[in-house]
Image 1 (cartoon, helix red, strand yellow):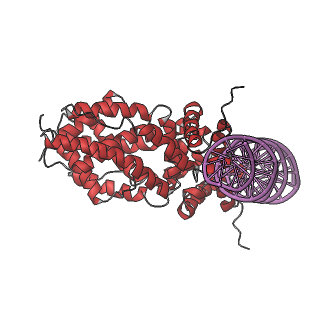
Image 2 (cartoon, chains in turn purple, brown, cyan, yellow):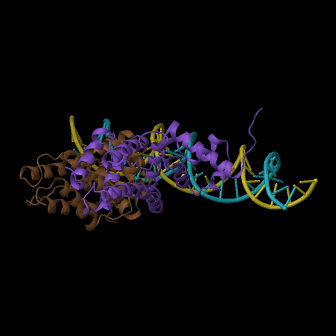
Image 3 (cartoon, chains in turn purple, cyan, orange, blue):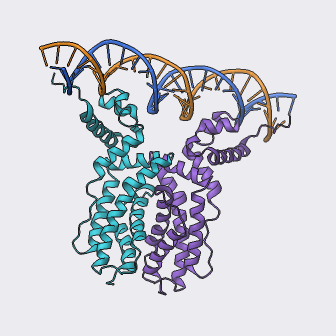
Length: 193
Length: 193
DNA sequence: CCGACATCGGCACGCGACGTGCCGATCGAG
DNA sequence: CTCGATCGGCACGTCGCGTGCCGATGTCGG
């Protein structure tokens, strides 16, 4: 037998996160439970509970594993094009495994737990909004956006609309949606009309 | 003893919806379960299952019981003021019992069930967007908004941002938030600047 | 007024996930 | 090599699920 030796410590942690993502991709949110992850990984439940206090915490870590990359906007000098590209990429990621199912699971758990909701907000939503704010602030400095625009709210509106579509609505985040959103944004704060 | 006689049929249905709302207001989403509603109502579980196939269905009906009123916008001739008033009222309703907890419960359930997500979207989100679209369409006709505005996306952005704040974010829907949102909307599509 | 019948409350079941406790095996640092 | 931390495996009690069955209770037609 070429059994891998029983792994411990950090290696096990890494493996468990991956198993969680695999499970989410294969069976979706409905099949996500601590028991299921433990079975799938061939692991005692303690090994999971020792690392994360709850399924929610595990899900948050699993999410960071795949959601921290691809968050940065390009800066080609054309805000609208850069936002468009990033929104389409994020929209696709949010609706595909493994990010889609895991994100949905976290959202569901968060409805029952306000602490988790705060963590989710701080660790993911605020981050995404911040990157967006950074990008449009640069655009304001280069004169692509009007100086009087309140960009903090704008960043929230942009990101919020995407999350609304992907998590609450049933409509896809397609080119029409992104263009409609950007039309409104640029009509409000763009300098070239 | 002045026991009320054992009620049947429609009367029981009505009562069960009310108990669900009471339970949501008192113990929140975490305490919502079919068993809990049955216990609280002093009812056999069959009496609930005979009426609704799942907790989700019961929650949807309970939600309609309290969410169908107060959805209409006033029409004072000032779009911005009318939207502002309605957004603040909706924001408050979404974050208070019983609507808040029940809405959260439905959102959570919907993450695991795409059929429910479609029903939720159709029965509530689309309705809210439609009322908003109606109001801003009238504003377009009276010349308060530019003729070229794509109001369908605008209505989604307006409502989506509110839902994002109340259900995913941890920020309150306060006057600043509503004003910031309306600033962007009016800057984009308003005719008077 | 009364009998037929749908609906009712109560109880029980098997299932699965939860979170915890205990065991003996196994790994790795000193 | 030794010893302690970590491991997999198993079991437990609790809970909610969805279903089945019972005898009691109401409603309605005759």
